[in-house]
Amino acid sequence: MHEMSLCEGIRRVVERAAASDGIARVTRVRLEIGRFAGVEKHALSFAWDIVMKGSKAEGAALEMIDLPGVALCYDCMKQVEIADRLDPCPDCGGGRLMPEGGDEMRIRDMEVV
Image (cartoon, rainbow, N blue to C red):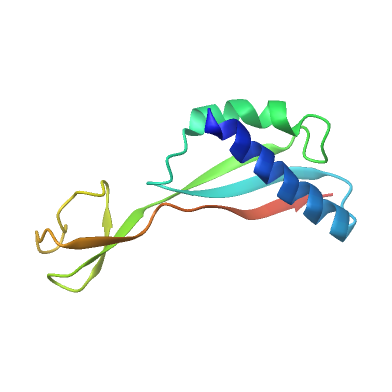
């Protein structure tokens, strides 16, 4: 389950930010997760509480924000949202799409005390 290692990476980022800014406690972390990021959100949520134990984010809420899959269609030259990497263009039906977004995962922000 790579979600455990994702949470460990998030913990390192949170701990570094908390130490540099003199933060006592993190109460919420909001993550942006792209449609194609390959993250199992249920597993990430399960791993969250375990990995954050003993950190400044122990007990913090995890909020996951879904980001769409985005591609550039070379037939109509529009940037479009797609549900699957192999979907045709929803505007023109063309099949020459280059995925441009939706595989990211990043911390959007944190609520702290």
